[in-house]
Length: 234
Image (cartoon, rainbow, N blue to C red):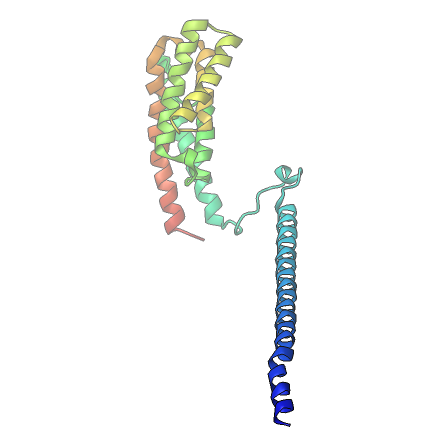
Protein backbone atom coordinates (compact mmCIF):
# COMPACT_ATOMS: atom_id res chain seq x y z
CA UNK A 1 0.00 0.00 0.00
CA UNK A 2 2.81 2.30 0.83
CA UNK A 3 4.46 1.51 -2.46
CA UNK A 4 1.29 2.29 -4.34
CA UNK A 5 0.78 5.58 -2.50
CA UNK A 6 4.38 6.55 -2.92
CA UNK A 7 4.11 5.78 -6.61
CA UNK A 8 1.05 7.91 -6.91
CA UNK A 9 2.71 10.73 -5.00
CA UNK A 10 5.74 10.43 -7.22
CA UNK A 11 3.61 10.69 -10.32
CA UNK A 12 1.84 13.84 -9.12
CA UNK A 13 4.70 16.21 -10.11
CA UNK A 14 4.87 14.56 -13.50
CA UNK A 15 1.17 15.07 -14.01
CA UNK A 16 1.12 18.64 -12.61
CA UNK A 17 4.17 19.80 -14.55
CA UNK A 18 2.54 19.79 -17.98
CA UNK A 19 -0.67 21.12 -16.48
CA UNK A 20 1.12 24.06 -14.93
CA UNK A 21 2.94 24.66 -18.19
CA UNK A 22 -0.39 24.67 -20.00
CA UNK A 23 -1.86 27.06 -17.46
CA UNK A 24 1.09 29.45 -17.75
CA UNK A 25 0.96 29.23 -21.53
CA UNK A 26 -2.75 29.98 -21.55
CA UNK A 27 -2.24 32.83 -19.10
CA UNK A 28 0.54 34.38 -21.16
CA UNK A 29 -1.49 34.01 -24.35
CA UNK A 30 -4.44 35.62 -22.62
CA UNK A 31 -2.32 38.54 -21.42
CA UNK A 32 -0.87 38.92 -24.87
CA UNK A 33 -4.31 39.00 -26.39
CA UNK A 34 -5.41 41.49 -23.79
CA UNK A 35 -2.34 43.56 -24.55
CA UNK A 36 -3.13 43.45 -28.23
CA UNK A 37 -6.68 44.51 -27.48
CA UNK A 38 -5.46 47.37 -25.29
CA UNK A 39 -3.01 48.46 -27.98
CA UNK A 40 -5.78 48.26 -30.56
CA UNK A 41 -8.20 50.37 -28.54
CA UNK A 42 -5.47 52.88 -27.66
CA UNK A 43 -4.50 53.26 -31.29
CA UNK A 44 -8.15 53.53 -32.31
CA UNK A 45 -8.87 56.20 -29.72
CA UNK A 46 -5.82 58.22 -30.78
CA UNK A 47 -6.87 57.95 -34.41
CA UNK A 48 -10.38 59.05 -33.53
CA UNK A 49 -8.98 62.02 -31.61
CA UNK A 50 -6.77 62.88 -34.56
CA UNK A 51 -9.75 62.69 -36.89
CA UNK A 52 -11.83 64.82 -34.58
CA UNK A 53 -9.08 67.38 -34.16
CA UNK A 54 -8.41 67.32 -37.88
CA UNK A 55 -12.07 67.88 -38.64
CA UNK A 56 -12.16 70.62 -36.04
CA UNK A 57 -9.25 72.40 -37.67
CA UNK A 58 -10.80 72.13 -41.09
CA UNK A 59 -14.11 73.42 -39.79
CA UNK A 60 -12.50 76.40 -38.05
CA UNK A 61 -10.46 77.27 -41.12
CA UNK A 62 -13.56 77.15 -43.24
CA UNK A 63 -15.35 79.47 -40.86
CA UNK A 64 -12.41 81.89 -40.61
CA UNK A 65 -11.71 82.04 -44.33
CA UNK A 66 -12.74 85.45 -45.68
CA UNK A 67 -15.37 85.78 -48.32
CA UNK A 68 -14.64 87.34 -51.68
CA UNK A 69 -17.10 90.12 -50.81
CA UNK A 70 -15.54 91.01 -47.44
CA UNK A 71 -13.38 93.74 -48.97
CA UNK A 72 -16.56 95.46 -50.16
CA UNK A 73 -18.00 95.68 -46.64
CA UNK A 74 -17.15 98.42 -44.13
CA UNK A 75 -14.87 97.48 -41.26
CA UNK A 76 -16.84 96.86 -38.09
CA UNK A 77 -15.96 99.58 -35.59
CA UNK A 78 -15.48 98.45 -31.96
CA UNK A 79 -17.90 101.14 -30.87
CA UNK A 80 -19.99 103.92 -32.35
CA UNK A 81 -17.92 107.14 -32.51
CA UNK A 82 -19.08 109.91 -30.24
CA UNK A 83 -19.92 113.40 -31.45
CA UNK A 84 -16.60 114.73 -30.17
CA UNK A 85 -14.70 112.00 -32.06
CA UNK A 86 -16.25 113.35 -35.25
CA UNK A 87 -16.25 117.07 -34.48
CA UNK A 88 -12.64 117.60 -33.34
CA UNK A 89 -10.93 115.94 -36.36
CA UNK A 90 -13.26 117.83 -38.70
CA UNK A 91 -12.60 121.12 -36.90
CA UNK A 92 -8.86 120.42 -37.03
CA UNK A 93 -8.99 119.80 -40.77
CA UNK A 94 -10.95 123.01 -41.27
CA UNK A 95 -8.49 125.04 -39.19
CA UNK A 96 -5.46 123.53 -40.94
CA UNK A 97 -6.80 124.23 -44.43
CA UNK A 98 -7.89 127.73 -43.40
CA UNK A 99 -4.40 128.56 -42.12
CA UNK A 100 -2.75 127.14 -45.24
CA UNK A 101 -5.21 129.04 -47.42
CA UNK A 102 -4.47 132.32 -45.64
CA UNK A 103 -0.73 131.74 -45.98
CA UNK A 104 -1.32 131.04 -49.66
CA UNK A 105 -2.95 134.45 -50.07
CA UNK A 106 -0.06 136.18 -48.31
CA UNK A 107 2.57 134.39 -50.39
CA UNK A 108 0.78 134.70 -53.74
CA UNK A 109 2.45 138.05 -54.64
CA UNK A 110 5.83 136.33 -54.29
CA UNK A 111 4.83 133.50 -56.59
CA UNK A 112 4.72 130.92 -53.79
CA UNK A 113 1.95 128.58 -52.76
CA UNK A 114 1.42 126.18 -49.87
CA UNK A 115 -2.26 125.11 -49.97
CA UNK A 116 -2.09 121.93 -52.04
CA UNK A 117 -4.52 119.06 -52.51
CA UNK A 118 -2.08 116.48 -51.02
CA UNK A 119 -2.25 118.25 -47.65
CA UNK A 120 -5.98 117.55 -47.53
CA UNK A 121 -5.10 113.85 -47.61
CA UNK A 122 -2.41 114.42 -44.97
CA UNK A 123 -5.00 116.11 -42.74
CA UNK A 124 -7.30 113.11 -43.06
CA UNK A 125 -4.55 110.70 -42.03
CA UNK A 126 -3.32 112.81 -39.11
CA UNK A 127 -6.68 113.83 -37.64
CA UNK A 128 -8.90 110.81 -38.37
CA UNK A 129 -6.33 108.07 -37.63
CA UNK A 130 -3.68 109.65 -35.37
CA UNK A 131 -2.46 106.27 -34.07
CA UNK A 132 -1.94 104.72 -37.50
CA UNK A 133 1.66 104.03 -38.61
CA UNK A 134 1.25 106.39 -41.57
CA UNK A 135 0.34 109.23 -39.16
CA UNK A 136 3.64 109.06 -37.25
CA UNK A 137 5.81 112.16 -37.45
CA UNK A 138 8.71 110.11 -38.75
CA UNK A 139 6.63 108.66 -41.58
CA UNK A 140 5.15 112.01 -42.55
CA UNK A 141 8.38 114.04 -42.67
CA UNK A 142 10.53 111.27 -44.13
CA UNK A 143 8.02 110.50 -46.88
CA UNK A 144 7.12 114.10 -47.75
CA UNK A 145 10.71 115.30 -48.00
CA UNK A 146 12.01 112.20 -49.77
CA UNK A 147 9.19 111.94 -52.32
CA UNK A 148 9.40 115.65 -53.12
CA UNK A 149 13.13 115.28 -53.82
CA UNK A 150 12.41 112.23 -56.00
CA UNK A 151 10.01 114.36 -58.05
CA UNK A 152 12.73 116.95 -58.64
CA UNK A 153 15.20 114.26 -59.76
CA UNK A 154 12.67 112.62 -62.07
CA UNK A 155 11.90 115.90 -63.82
CA UNK A 156 15.62 116.74 -64.13
CA UNK A 157 16.47 113.36 -65.68
CA UNK A 158 13.43 112.57 -67.82
CA UNK A 159 11.79 115.95 -68.33
CA UNK A 160 8.03 116.52 -68.13
CA UNK A 161 5.83 113.68 -69.29
CA UNK A 162 4.48 110.23 -68.47
CA UNK A 163 7.91 108.64 -67.99
CA UNK A 164 8.90 111.09 -65.26
CA UNK A 165 5.57 110.55 -63.51
CA UNK A 166 5.80 106.76 -63.66
CA UNK A 167 9.41 106.60 -62.51
CA UNK A 168 8.84 109.08 -59.69
CA UNK A 169 5.86 107.16 -58.29
CA UNK A 170 7.69 103.81 -58.53
CA UNK A 171 10.75 105.29 -56.84
CA UNK A 172 8.60 106.93 -54.15
CA UNK A 173 6.90 103.63 -53.28
CA UNK A 174 10.27 101.85 -53.10
CA UNK A 175 11.72 104.68 -50.99
CA UNK A 176 8.88 104.61 -48.46
CA UNK A 177 9.08 100.83 -48.13
CA UNK A 178 12.87 100.86 -47.67
CA UNK A 179 12.75 103.62 -45.05
CA UNK A 180 9.67 102.16 -43.30
CA UNK A 181 7.88 105.47 -43.76
CA UNK A 182 4.80 104.57 -45.81
CA UNK A 183 2.72 107.74 -45.93
CA UNK A 184 0.35 107.55 -48.95
CA UNK A 185 -0.30 111.29 -49.42
CA UNK A 186 3.42 111.84 -50.03
CA UNK A 187 3.23 109.92 -53.32
CA UNK A 188 1.42 112.88 -54.89
CA UNK A 189 4.29 115.29 -54.21
CA UNK A 190 6.38 114.21 -57.25
CA UNK A 191 3.38 114.53 -59.57
CA UNK A 192 2.61 117.97 -58.19
CA UNK A 193 6.12 119.15 -58.97
CA UNK A 194 6.41 117.53 -62.40
CA UNK A 195 3.07 118.90 -63.61
CA UNK A 196 3.38 122.28 -61.90
CA UNK A 197 5.67 124.68 -63.79
CA UNK A 198 5.29 127.27 -61.03
CA UNK A 199 7.33 124.99 -58.71
CA UNK A 200 10.20 124.27 -61.08
CA UNK A 201 12.18 127.33 -60.03
CA UNK A 202 12.30 126.00 -56.43
CA UNK A 203 14.39 123.02 -57.49
CA UNK A 204 15.36 120.98 -54.38
CA UNK A 205 13.98 123.65 -52.06
CA UNK A 206 10.65 122.09 -53.02
CA UNK A 207 11.42 119.30 -50.54
CA UNK A 208 11.47 121.82 -47.67
CA UNK A 209 8.81 124.15 -48.99
CA UNK A 210 6.00 123.35 -49.15
CA UNK A 211 6.72 119.74 -48.10
CA UNK A 212 8.34 120.06 -44.67
CA UNK A 213 6.84 123.49 -43.91
CA UNK A 214 3.25 122.34 -44.29
CA UNK A 215 4.00 119.17 -42.31
CA UNK A 216 5.19 121.24 -39.34
CA UNK A 217 1.91 123.14 -39.28
CA UNK A 218 -0.18 119.98 -39.70
CA UNK A 219 1.70 118.11 -36.97
CA UNK A 220 1.03 120.99 -34.53
CA UNK A 221 -2.65 120.88 -35.44
CA UNK A 222 -2.66 117.12 -34.91
CA UNK A 223 -1.46 117.54 -31.33
CA UNK A 224 -4.25 120.05 -30.71
CA UNK A 225 -6.87 117.66 -32.11
CA UNK A 226 -5.57 114.72 -30.04
CA UNK A 227 -5.64 116.86 -26.88
CA UNK A 228 -9.21 117.98 -27.55
CA UNK A 229 -10.40 114.44 -28.23
CA UNK A 230 -8.93 113.17 -24.97
CA UNK A 231 -10.03 116.00 -22.68
CA UNK A 232 -13.28 117.31 -24.17
CA UNK A 233 -15.59 114.39 -24.86
CA UNK A 234 -19.32 114.71 -25.50
